[in-house]
Structure formats: structure tokens, C-alpha cells
Length: 424
Ligand code: GDP
Ligand code: IMO
Ligand code: MG
Image (tube, rainbow, N blue to C red):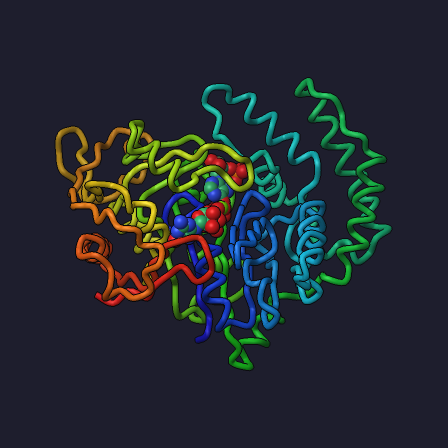
């Protein structure tokens, strides 16, 4: 069963792309299975930074076939901008396959995203305003427009026009100026024509690849606690990043998957609103944000930061059947005299070791920490787990003991080769 899933174990930006880039060496297909251009996946190669939103992070390798599967919502303007930028930098995207079953994002989705956020006022989710929620809502309402429809461009034009007119009525009802229907139809027909050669039956493509024993890597965007069902609802995204979503989002079955890698930072970050038990609003939090350069790739927003939360990680192991963990950004903790790890919560005075399923309860828990000595050593050049300082080894051993699955890869810098394979 040669399918590997990579999934974020926290609230996103764990460094998934860097680990996917590493695993891509041994995979032929790298497949995005959910989300859209709300994702910002960064790979750094020889000081060159590649920030990907829609195209799978494996694209940097010539041997990889990048696939955008059915569970993704596709914003064509972003897709083509990304293709042009990558090709301008010498990375070919000609092998890209986009599922005919994936749904398209249109300008009205972005307008509705902004209206919904404005209506929520102080209680806003802090979405990326990319139209992700409204596009998935249209999919669920069965009025979405799918990628495969661009193959019949005349009909596609008529559908886009009808949808734009219907959506304009709602936009005007909300007191916002209507969109220019003719401009949208003309522009999206051009995008649709450009998309035609990339359109594919990716379900058949992937099953055929498995039949040939080729290695397939499924790339999660967002993360476990942004999952529409299992995350901190309503402060979540509108898809299922958890490993189960990888099956629905690709058409592969659960028994096709053999390895599920959860990615966590050595601490925690979150961008947007919602509960965050270990959030630090003090100078330690500022240090994590400054040293870790915790500013969003997509929106430039300052992320929120706090210590590592093993209660959440244990829940992520359950929700995704994680077989292993990759822990990134250990180097960001280099300067701390002491480092904390949350091992349990206190709820109404009682110690609990589980993750409460309701956001309102999670917002009330207090973290219980184990405090470890820091290593105060620059780890960025470390490539062997044996040469890690004993305090860093103790940190990794505690994480493993807490989450119950092995930590296999440890990130010590942003560059492609800044990692080590951890053996206790
Ligand atoms: P993703 O959305 O999960 O792919 O993560 P992002 O790319 O949004 O954010 C992770 C950031 O951390 C990026 O800027 C990466 O280049 C960087 N990064 C990844 N792993 C490491 C690491 O081990 N150490 C350091 N210092 N930076 C890392
Ligand atoms: P990657 O793949 C971090 C957050 C937004 C907001 C919530 C809903 O780079 O880890 P949406 O636009 O999806 O409706 O916003 O989800 N969010 C992310 N946070 N990393 C991401 O992606 C995110 N994608 C969405 O900030 O809180
Ligand atoms: Mg990101």
C-alpha cells in the first residue's frame, strides 16, 4: 500500500510543505486533497523561497506528477499566476493534473466571504477572504461549478453567467455593489480555455498508478484543528484536512493508505480567531513570533503563538491515525532558558488529559505544563540526533512519550536540508 498522507497536527503552517518536499524524493504523485488558495506552503531551496497556494509542494521535483484532486476548490486566477511564476523560475508545471470533479471558486465567493465576516463583526472567524467557505457551501448546496465543465466552453459560459446573475441578487440584497457579470464571464471563459489541457480523471489516474505500485503522497492543507468537523468550530476552515478527508478528497480508499505523518511545530501557532489554550501573550510569545517569523504566507497576518500542546497532539493522533510525527522548527526554541510542554488541562479545577470536543469548553481550560531546561545552543547545523544537546533530546523524548507515536523527522531550519532523522 504505497500511499502516504501528510497532515497538519495543529492549526496550520506547521511546515507541511518542507516535509512534503523531503518525502517527494520517494514519491511519484503528490496530491492536494482539500482546501484551496487559503493554504500557503513554503519550500526553501538554496535560499530560493517557493510559496505555493494551490500547486502541490512536490512540483519542485522533475519526477513528480502534481495532482489537484476532487476535494480541492480551485481559484483559476491564482492557479495560473502560480503556474506562470513557477515556470518563470524554471519549474515546469506541464504535468499538472486537475480533477474534473474539483469545484471552481468565482469572485462572488470572495464577496460572500467578506460579507459573512462583516456580518459577524467582533465575532469574525478571521478567514483568509479567499472565498473558500462560500465555494464549499455552493458544493454542498449542489450549485457549484466543477472543473470538468470547462471542457464544453459554450455551456460553461452560460452556467457562469447564470450563477453570476443569481449571486449578484444576493450581493445587492446585502447592500454591496453588484459584480460586473460580462467581465467575469469573459475572463473566466479565458481561464476555462486555459484549464482544459490540465483537466483529468484523477481518480482513475491515481488508482492506475497504485496498480503499477507507484508511490503516492497526499498533501494536506490547513490542519486537524481547522477541520470543519473536528476543529474548533466555528473557527475552522470549510473542508476536512484530517486524514479521512484524504480519501473523500481523492477517491482512494482507507485501505490504500499505509503511512500517515502528522506535522507539528516544536511550539504552537494559530492565525485567525478561536480558542488556543497554550497561547502566550507575554515576551515568550513575542520571541516565538519574532524568531519563528510567524507571519502568514497568504495574508501577512501576525500569527498567535504559544507552547507545544500535547493534549491536542494526542487528539490529532486519534483523529488521523497518525503513524508518526515530524516535528519542525526545533531551532526556534534555541534561545530559551527553559521550555514548556503542555501535558494536560485543568477544567473547573479538575485535571483532564483529554481534548474537550466543544470550543466553548476548550476556551475555558488552563494548560498544565512540564518545564524543561532549554539547550541554548544553535541547532541549525545539527544533522545527527546523537549530537543534539541532552536538553533537546529530553524535549523530543517527552513529546514522544506524550503523544504515543514516534517522532521521525526533526526540522532545524527552513532550508530543504535542514533536518535530522531522530532516533532516541
Ligand atoms: P505549511 O503551511 O504547513 O506548509 O507551513 P508554512 O510554509 O506556512 O510555514 C512554515 C514556515 O516555517 C515556512 O516559512 C518554512 O520555510 C519554515 N520552516 C519549516 N520548517 C522549519 C524548521 O524546521 N525551522 C525553521 N526555522 N523554519 C522552518
Ligand atoms: P496552511 O495549509 C493557517 C485559517 C484562517 C481562519 C480559518 C478559516 O498554510 O497550513 P478560511 O479562509 O479557510 O475560511 O479561513 O482557517 N486558515 C489557515 N491558518 N494555515 C492555513 O493553511 C490556513 N488556511 C486557513 O486563518 O482562521
Ligand atoms: Mg502555511
